[in-house]
Length: 401
Image (cartoon, rainbow, N blue to C red):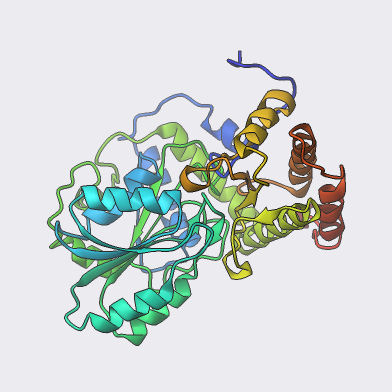
């Protein structure tokens, strides 16, 4: 029995954890197995090959770690860097702030480039730092691809272009937790050295798996990196990869089968089609927000996220009350504003295994909540704007043609 029962389905529209497809739930509904039997290594081998596809890499080495995105962060940092190393990190919202906090606590020399919340990474400042760093004291550039607190997406190709322009050898480390499998992400093409994501976002699985993918350059750096690591040490994984057993410790059998089902769904739809669907859902959401007379927290169109929209509310409304009312009255889960934007924004997550009609249900719910809290919204305005766009852009379902 649910702790707080509500009839029907919960409309989960936080930007992670997200809705889990029935196929994934059914795949995980199984007993434990001996992970040393031939079956689990055989399954793991295919999963590792397929995980490379979602990062769009052929040369990267993937690691599937029983952890969250936070653990994946730590794995990326400690395997490639040494205490005292100078790294450049962008502060643009709550999750980039938390990664910077981790970097500092791991005793790296963090050179922070800060932007207003709602803006993307300041690449002009990065360019000046790279130009001045003729001694190559900067060992890594760390960036959050998609900042879920503010709905901002950064231009990774532009970062790589700067590194190449200044012929700078710094490692390129990317948090793709709320972008990979939803936004355009090209590890090899953009020269990303370590990319990471989590199972509970666009993969549409339960929390509990962290995915880290390392370039050959990152693996080489791990040979000399002096940061202390045990649980997250890539060397342990690589040793078991060579043995063909893959796991230096006990994996979650259920999550492995869930991952198999989740990847199968993505590949059946086609990764490029998945990315296009996220773009469609995001555009519909932004049109609804505009029809309501509200503004996007993201300050420029070039930074708009296709996985989450952070909506600014008028000063006389506490956005936390919108989230509370949605959950208490309509069984609708929206994202709170965090830290600097607490009380000022609410977030609509539109990522994962999600379709257009589900989104329209969310938008209808938001309109009723806005009316409840005293905002003069015209009921149906946002839904109509979204419908008009979607009706002209939704493709036929390929398997049903």
